[in-house]
Image (cartoon, rainbow, N blue to C red; front, side, top):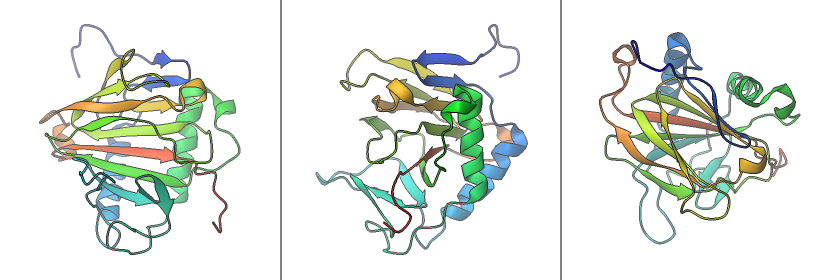
Length: 220
């Protein structure tokens, strides 16, 4: 935001958890948004996630590489239309590795390629409860990219969904990476600030693109 009293700077929120404001420039945001719009189309497109208890997540989701469902991964959209999951593009994996290098250092990127993306769409009323990204076999850092509306991102601890936690404002283009001792920290989105997306992006709502290393065998 122009004219801010205090400029936003790179911040280590917890050991291994780093927020990098404005990591994606306007052109990078547009490219990623255009790709998300294509990925959201059927088959295996944007769907509502249903929890084992019968509830539904308010953020809708589409997956690349492997399809996430509570609480595992599949090759097809098992809780959607049953179609094969869309492939994970190599350029997105390179973006993930560059994000880790910029946030945590090149050594933290590791040898394993990023091969899964979970893309969540939040409208103004959507939320995400505190949870851990623990269904992967790899401990590689999680990469989170934000597009559109600003949100409050709540980053907690590895033991409980309750305090202590830190609330971070994530705006369009921001990067958040968490790995190492924070890899299994609880986190969530208690609030989205509707109408705060950059006008040039022409996006009503928020997109969160989360990149992960599965650690699964290629034929598994």
